[in-house]
Image 1: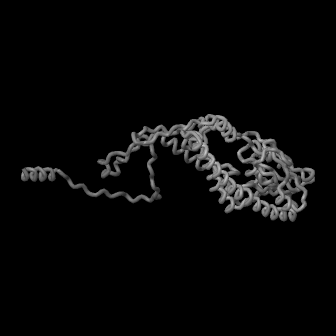
Image 2: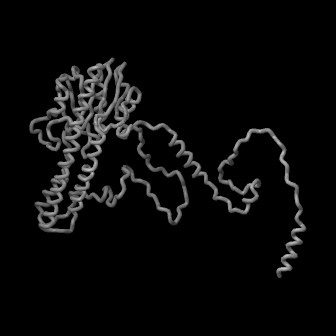
Image 3: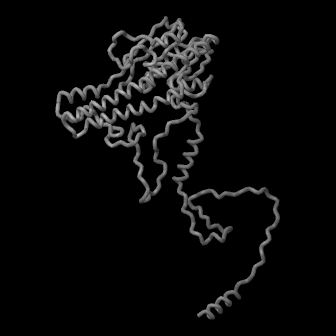
Length: 386
């Protein structure tokens, strides 16, 4: 067999004619790299590359894929509006857009399936009960554990939905038109309340004078001119409502290090509340259940005291120092000062007391920082209760 195969190969070789190497004419043209456009009919088996003819062609790129890539490129290149509560480090960030079905790709058997988010979904995972986060269950529906009267008392206490200063308040240190310092009590989850504070701020800005705005939890650089207006407009300010010839600047009063120290106790407090919520649905009954609940409540209260010490007491001292520094600048340059802070940073009355024992009074440390300057402050009524 081997001699026969050799004979056949020799005969075949004799049929091959040697062709001279082609000589390309010299043409003076600019060298431009050519990239074939992607299309559904694209195939790498080109005549210029005969060595690749035997390679299987790449899968075609479908039109929906190209449309998705084009939409992504357009979105990435579009300008991003300012978000005041996303300016933690001075960089404007944009909230993630809702998922939109753009690509129609065949599902592989190993690929995970993504469900479209339900309306109003906040992007938080681990939903095991409809409408809940991290298996948070309604307190009102928790079962009894042996003592009905005690169970009803526990349910009432843990299911209360109250908001400190929900009806708003006013701190009339002087007549509003005579004040040079304005204090705005804020609730950071209430957009309508924040917008009302912006409306008041526009009314309090004096024509022909500068205005310095100190905002809570802002750690970016000082904003001037158009950037300052964009920041406040994102909070609800109508730039057209401002008087003419007004120069506005925005800065923050918080200290980043002290603020970050409050994040862990704040998270721990929420986890303690979640632990109590899970315990309400425990199958345990009798005094053992109530004793365990009392221990959990004690631990939660202990952590809450530490959280208050850092989040309220420590940041109040930062606020007072920042206010003193800003007031010196405002006096020197003839500006009005506008301070935005949570109500618990403005008032002497503890924020967790709902009963109007002695009314609302400005916090003593804040009053000392004002050093007798005329001020006016207040907080609008809550528009929502959580």
